[in-house]
Length: 412
Image (tube, rainbow, N blue to C red; front, side, top):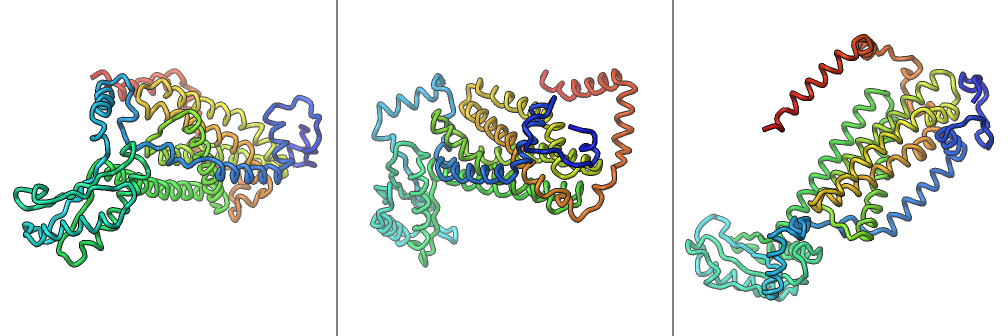
């Protein structure tokens, strides 16, 4: 690349195939910037295809913690033996626990009403339910509660069909008990799985909202631009959708079960590393615009300069996550590949989609702020860097001693 182009002269011919001494990332930058619209359209088509053709993440999600244990464990072997010896007891059950809303003891009329409710619920023919057994023997000795035992027909207690059956059961109980002075709830393993799923969904929503607000606020402080602040949120949101589809497809292909909190972990990892990688590019892009490069040259140089940094950082994280394959607990064994896929997708996005979009937007990515035109003084960072440069051995020893002190607890 010529010095004139770097200093704001005529931009390079991004369609030219011959550039002496080009690095891999410079060639990538030229390709992405020279065909920005093709890159964006290709990403959109690929995202739509992945979303439409891959299974849902819930298809490989397991709420049964026992499914993550190694088959060599005694508890797992005992469960398998129990299912073989007593197959009639392997069917899941749900318990409808009924009590008076005022906290008083159940009356004979209340017990009779519970029996009627059990028959009414049975008549609804809720899918995958059967039995609805109750009676005097199902009333607590102190008359505080009465139980209706409901059979649930499926192979595993975390079967999605069973979860839907419990949801339907809970929805039907309210109308049946209306005006009776009674209240009820559904308990049991399957009901716990439903509640866990609801809890994880709420956690995903809360974490997602908090993460987005923090990222937008942080980037607004740094760049003072709504476009720069919203860019990571929009792009990483698309990447999250693509990643969940790819993880679900990999789970189906390799028979992996993942925990219910995987989606929340994916969100945190993608927004964390994705924002980092995008900031790497934007900082370098801003620097090159300030130096006088046109918007296309600035992005080519940015990809050239930070592409290796982003790739090496992502590679280290991918390898670290894949080490989880060595874990005996199935949750970690499936979490590693899922997170590695997420980081890989974010890496490709950072070196293709983000540069393509930003190269089209140009300096307007920092609009309406004019601060990008002025080089930051970075006085605190400068002083810190100078101090470390003068006494690197002392700083290394002091920081190392601090880390050892903080890690000393593991000795106990």
